[in-house]
Amino acid sequence: MAKRKTKSKSSEGLINALRFISVAQKAEGNSPFHSHCILHNGFAMAYNGTITAGAKIEKTLEIAPHTYKLIAALERTTKDISITELEGKLSVRSGGFQAHVPCWHESMPSLAPDPASWPITDVLRENLEMISAISVDNDKKRIVECSILIRENSAFASDGAVLLEAWHGLNLPECILPKAFVTAIINTKKKMTKFGKSENSCTVYFEDESFIKTQIYSETWPDINVILNKPSKPEPLPKGFYEALRNIEPFSNGKEAEKTVYFVDGALQSHRDKNEGATCECNVKHGPAFNIKRLKRIEHCVETVDFYSHNVAFFFGNGVRGALAGVRV
Image (cartoon, rainbow, N blue to C red; front, side):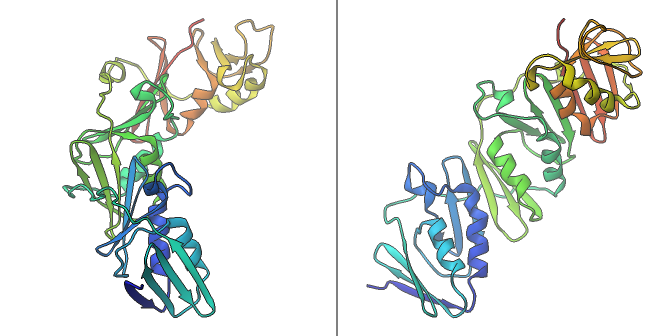
């Protein structure tokens, strides 16, 4: 028996909303809420166990359809669309086309966003994108390697050997964010407007009232100021540094993640012994050695650098600073 029927000239708005919330969905999941969204109170909302996403819709539907099958059905409509709620499914009809989309009829988790308490701008997205070059891995066990830290004025990322801080200048509470949430925010090109936080979650709002919410880590980061605030004497990055680095890279021993560059007076070398591998002239001093892959990872950030203090490279760029641990030789 039909419960509710809606008609529309176009499915574009609903498709866009469903595509937006699919960031928090899986085509096939271990639980129905991984693959089914909730259409409720003028919003489409989805949850995958960590991330929640919501977007406004015009349809007055109150049901939990399979997200990807509803998208597939709507993509095959043309005009004069009819959507009807049936027992356990959603009927989508347009012209000679009809599809029955399965729906979940049991209770779903509450997906309400956190109250919007702090104004934000797209500077936060730019900030997160800047530090996302530092690879973080959800499979890592150390909190600094599987999360991104945001706090008032700055955001931080680390892979265990590189620590990067980028200044966003916003008044925000401290949150430790999962990598998947940060990736979702970076990939959403809507204008950011508000930020909300509760004890266990935080939410980013966009100008069209859509939102992305995430659970946050309860663990804490170590005191990173102990590293970043060490005294250093940065100088402009030597001219041609990265060109020289790439020239010697193929000759360095080990897998890509293990390759090392050695600094000698006036040159970069692939080996400590200049009679092995490759050497390329560069205005550097003798002494340190660094992982090549990690040096390349921070290339976009480095304008000035001190390679020679505390066996750490302290680097600075436009709105960023960071530290790269040297390789002990």
